[in-house]
Image 1 (tube, one colour):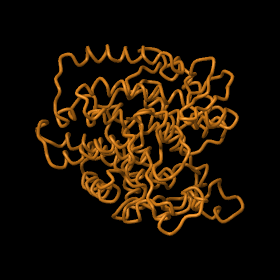
Image 2 (cartoon, rainbow, N blue to C red):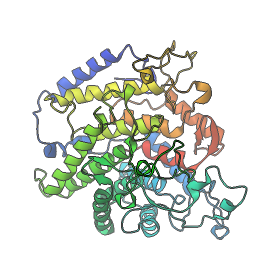
Image 3 (tube, rainbow, N blue to C red):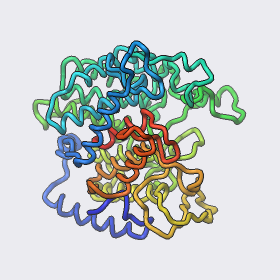
Image 4 (spheres, one colour):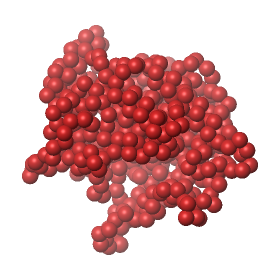
Amino acid sequence: MTGNPLASKPRGGHLVGQIAIVLIVLVFSTANTSRTSATALASSTRYNPKACNPKALSTSMAIRDALQTSHPADLNAGCHLETDFYDPSTGLYSEGVWHNCLMGIASLQQQQQSSVEVDSATALLAESLYKHAWDGTSFRRRTWSGQWGHSILLTDKAPYQANYYQESSEHRCIQHAVALLFWTQLAQKEPQPFAKQQSEIVNTFLKEFWNPDQKQWTTSSRSQGGGTKARPSASSGEIGITQELNGEEWEEPYYRAVDQAVAVLACCEHLRLLQHNRANANDDDEETRRIQSIVQSTCHQLLSANTNGFGYENVATAKSYLGLERNRNFWHDGWVLLALIQAQDYYRWPPNDDDDANHGKCHRMQMWQGLIDLYGHDDSVWKTPEPSPSSPSSVAPTTGSSFDGTIWHWPTHLKPPSNNVRYCGDNALAFAICRGMSIQVPVEEGQFWDFVAMLQEQGHRTPLVSVADAYPDPRLHPNTELCALLVWP
């Protein structure tokens, strides 16, 4: 496959041809291999970090450099919560766990691509995050630290969705998982002191977030209730359910696909560390088998359409939440596909399929095409579809041209262009998916890079990007996600 994976793909019509090409490639690539155990497959070279395309690497490095200079000359004056992104005294990129760990991952990948050791800024970031956010059980969602001032939160000039900037002791799966990813990569490069911390982080992750009865990962830690309908929104601090619920219904759990996905990514990274640490690559051990089993169970729950499954076997009708009614968006769905790509050696789909290597690859290609059908942006006239009575959510709008290479946040049958938005994070995630599926991304052409350039231009802080086509302000989260997903996984 050549050309831009984020463009040149029509909505439907060419899927059979694409799958046929994949099958031909797989026949040649697997002709001289035999089925081996999951443990043996775990040592496959496919898990070695891929060389980044030069444009992706240079863009990621430029974003990191720009973020690290985004602070006042006099730190004693304090950093602005919204516009100052870095504190050199702590190495932190603001105060949340998610974007700090993504920057740690991006930095490690950049250093690996450049064949250099872990630098002092990355080590300082980990040290500060562990000091300020780790409480012995999990990472607190947000802890005030570093040089950021918070008095603005009490004024009429408080930032948009100011609750995000409030301190929170909540333990969240997605943040513990991304921290585990960061520390696992650190432990592979610098065992001292990070290996001991990584062991603590992985053990509490499994204890606090994996529900072995449901075979799913909870949104909040199990010691904090696991994530029920009474859980306040992180953005507003308020419970977002408006219908009448009795006491028992408030305590009913819900599960998110994105938590399952990032947990799978973290577990796969941990399996690579276990493989890295074994003297004999063919050795097996109880911890490896347990983690492999959890990854397999999680992937099956993501794909299965049964009562406790998210149903991504058919991406058109999949659910990103179980136990809550929420509209889907690409950010949730995209992380699921990225996780399935990275976990491909640990699950078989369909579960009883002896030819899962071929069918799994084809299914992931089908998922990608299905996501394009749901979220793909094009510049042609948008026409409201006629919903099917049997499956209204599976209908996508009909257009007269090909997918142009960028991604809407909301499915196009739910929100037309006038009410939709193209976020930087969604499109960075699409880029990572294509890279993970070994679809070539041209260096100098394609709508993805044009889209990035547009976000840089409208934010007026090049190379930093703005939030989205509809939100011109440069903020931390789009830059950390772009910085990381250009070079990882």
